[in-house]
Length: 327
Image (cartoon, rainbow, N blue to C red; front, top):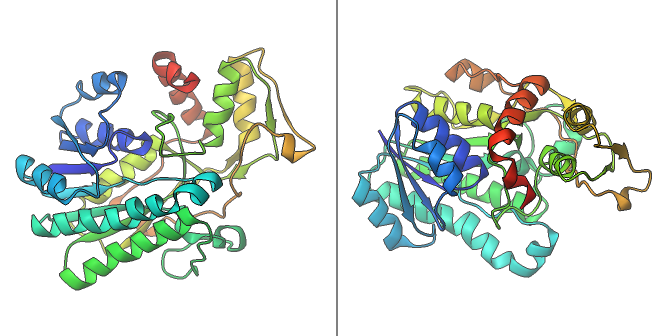
């Protein structure tokens, strides 16, 4: 199998690349910039073969060249811009182009080159404001209510991908990724707000106090679990659904994470700021849990990393790559 991984040099992409290569699956990273040297060193130790192809998802010729050069037969499409409010207001057209039109271009290239499976990396963001009102986010029954530009474009791109499935018979799967954190999260220029565990860990490493607007309780999912789930979807011979939530059964708060950080960094201090406007940690909504039964039933996926296991693994990763957080 030869997999084209768009956005492969970003946070989620690097985790998926690690997991694919460890399985002995050959991958082609298709991105606008090469993987960081420290990431490349780690990836080259894996079983599979890694190739990098510099290209933009809006470039039809570049996509065709990547598919034909490497004989691509499966796609994991993760390239996207995750904007904050400022970028929404200033670069809305670019966000729409990359997130939606870019998805169409990759789908068209995949169709031209007859790939056997296409996995679109969607997001919990596609549920929009439903994450605040629903008790449980379910793939088919929860009413989608996207509000901001990222939510709208992720929802739209997902529907576009699934429409291609209906129109062309292409084996397209949408994986809605939950609230992710973990190794290889770093500032790439296309993701404007980092996860709260990243933000607080960075403050701890810099010897600064973390001021939280609230406790920040939700079902966090470790990036290694996300990667394992995507690999399981890729390898599954039969999938009974076009959409799968990807999350974790483990719920904990950013405050819990800070308590563990205080054990590693004795000078680290944290508190909930009584005036949220003065907080230096930005938290997204405390989202409802995602139903992941169908993912487990169809692939055997089970999240391996609870709060303590993820902290231990992340701590070990930081010993080697912690400098990425200070940039």
